[in-house]
Image (tube, rainbow, N blue to C red; front, side, top):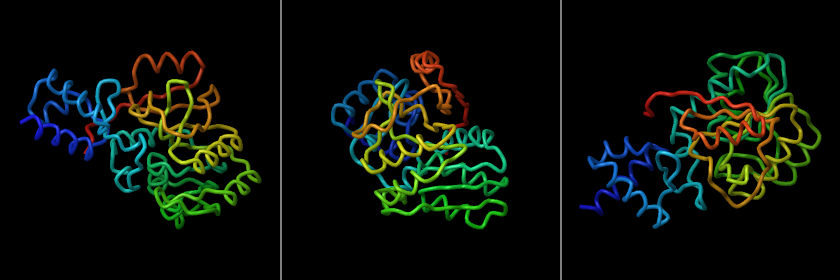
Length: 259
């Protein structure tokens, strides 16, 4: 029955995050043409978001899901992206790790393969992962706790950021819209992220390909040539060309099947 198939597709996307059409078709035992029609119907209902070659659950289009669920979504891609970002770390430098779930994977990699760093973060979870790692000094900035992603935001966080400077920033993004700008669901988070970029010598943007071409409520900053974009190799040719046109360094990593 079509209704059962639509429910199965929604559940699959809920569990796996962004998925390619072929993987969805294999899961529900339907043809590619049927799955494309089903995805169109689900998108019309507002249940999913279609993007290049696949779809994802509509968790970042107006309803923010829990941190643990977002962390497990697209986990294979996030780990591959974080491993590529890890290679950009410079020992004995000052680094800011934001509260994104992909950035959290850098912290977990640092726990396994530490190096001497001064790590600043506005994420309680990142601080917990790194707090007892040798040679890493962790500074958790203050502010108002945002429970959706265990981050510190608000005026105190903003004042703190204005007094600091970082060699490198590793930043996630809720969406990258067709206007070439980063967007967030939360106004306080958008402002804090904007300040992080302004107070860093270099920015690495960690974002999986499903986030491109989407728009959220609050603008953070434009993607620029000063940002090293690290994503997965499902990124469309159109977006690769756009990033090349603004001379933004791009790393597109391959990854295995998501667990």
